[in-house]
Amino acid sequence: MARDSFDPTTPASAAYATLHFGIGRVRHTIEWCDWMLARLDQHTSAPQHDDQHTSAPQHDDEHMRALQRDDVDPAKPTISE
Image (cartoon, rainbow, N blue to C red; front, side, top):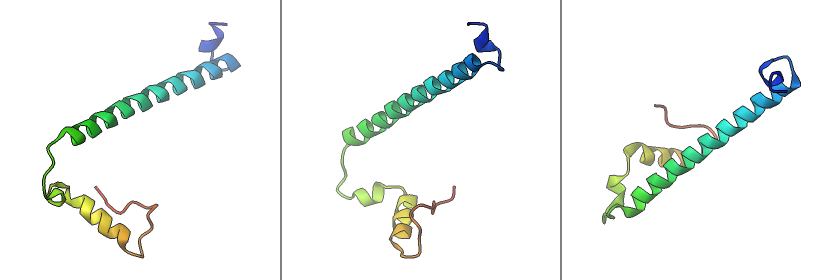
């Protein structure tokens, strides 16, 4: 059976490849969640300013104005980088 997982013409190989992909995807998702939690922790532990509007990146303001317009589809990206 172990030899079958390395022969790309066998069902065992397809199962192994699918499992390998799935494990990698779950690991990547966990890494992303850890990264996002760290960013949120930094944000919540940072000192708060009286005027938070000026500390936000300018492109976020532009994005919000674009989303408030009637002619913008929210499913389509409005900011090009």
